Length: 88
Image (tube, rainbow, N blue to C red):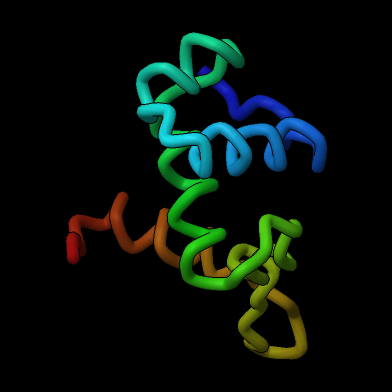
């Protein structure tokens, strides 16, 4: 199952509004038809950062290793080492 799109600012604000009105995570989830883990994540992020704004994504997967003037993705290196029997 793939990732769905991010919630828009209005829906994230609605989650926070419901939380401030003492609605439970389960009630918010049923009301807005979104997973409880999403509700919980939005509320946690809001408590920690004071904002629900989207943060920049990590650059994982975009790192490259230089090897004999050729760029090799770290994911490729990990995959090939795994195939060779190196597990970690």
